[in-house]
Length: 50
Image 1 (tube, rainbow, N blue to C red):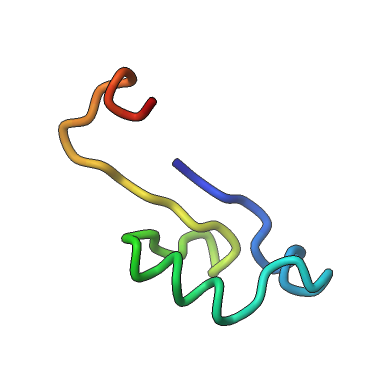
Image 2: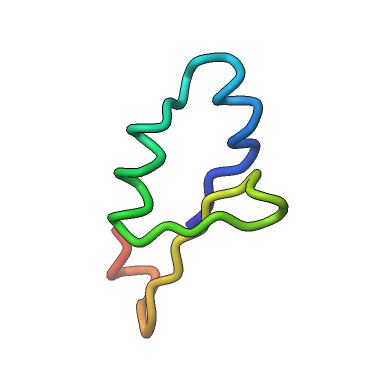
């Protein structure tokens, strides 16, 4: 699961530092020069994600 263009969302005030910290506590990590949040769920299937 990914959330792209984090920098644009932050500059448009749609994504704040507090929200970013919360997403990181849920297991998301920043990638692509800190512009994309990605969550990797090990051994998950598409049915599990629903």
